[in-house]
Image (cartoon, rainbow, N blue to C red):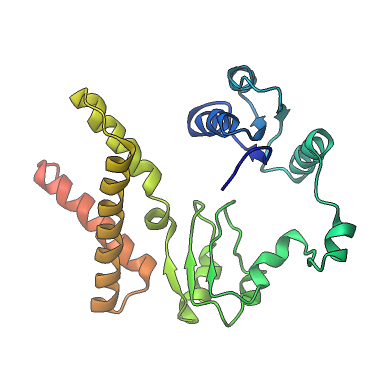
Length: 235
């Protein structure tokens, strides 16, 4: 995919992963919107690290609707946006932001915010949906989760589905301890092995014990922590 001149909004890009992504997207020729909330110094540092002039710095608390709307407005004012009228003329369907959950799809991936799926909208999930993979942390409320479980939808819970990031953080620690660093393909290969093994262990336990996938993941997690505490003589 050619990323040149694509507009990228990266929330929380004043440090860490967000900063790295902002810089990398800029290197690929993207028009980057750097967002920060409390860390103004970090936001400005990220902004200055982007050599391209195609950039924008915006303060916004993305947990607040008014700030999100302002972030979108400033991004559109700087880089332009989608002309809804022209989109409709080209037979594109313009939907409101909350309609994603109602689409006739096989897979839903809530990957943005906490509590995206809740008691007020869970019943809007299409009967066609067979799998939900939680990309965000805690995107499903407990009330909604019970409905999803009752419908028999296959759930890949957040701390399994989005564990690739923290796994790679562990890989970074290992490499730093060895002072020997892997190539990208090696990192991705090791990550694939870890994530596949984690998924299979949860899936196998779910089938064996007839557990909901989230419950199976919790059983494995708690057992591993308990065993580690026992091995260390803490209990």
